[in-house]
Length: 293
Image (cartoon, rainbow, N blue to C red; front, side, top):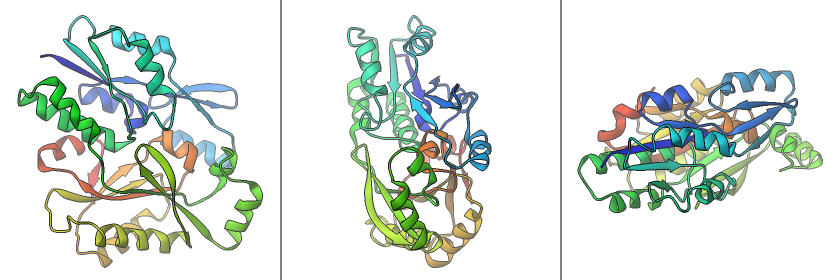
């Protein structure tokens, strides 16, 4: 069976990176100063940092991909493949998944993943799916990989400006948080981004949460597991990586640049942490958009 994978920009991949993996690409939209950009095409993390440096509380508004853009991408492949697999942003975070499912509800050739994940968690799923298809596992069985739960993932904003700009935090609450150096710690769970806890002082929080993730894991001695740090161009990320290596019995961390779909909501400087399964059979493909440090 010939299968074509199409992802959206919530994978944290650019269009170029997705295409290098043999995947199609659908960009989510972001509006900046009344101008609309395509994430992963003409809006990336570096461009976002320029906007951020100019005004941290610039209101950036994301929206689902244009239906015509989705249809255009699918039509490129629909006649040459037996199945099209589209993996969109978590259904709990956007209307993107529902919209695309409705568009292709009557098309048996198009399978839209009922997504509950975001960023590199999606690419991990897809690499495992590709492995299963290469092993000639039945399509329906291979698709069960998308329903498998993931290990704990934490997201820690360094600043609250993006949360205020997006209406997720009031200016008064942000002022109190800044005064007392309170740091919100967010977790990804069942497709939702929800509050994990509140901490104090960003640098201490990064090291503390890294230690907790590792010590609470049941897979400390499993060679298939890696510590993953996702970075939104934090100025001190190299220091944090060094500190994590000093307190944990690990000498390698997988470093990934955070997708601008996420940084729009969390701000530049945010860091995500996880201790997660990255088996040997998919690491070469992971290396195309991440690196071991």
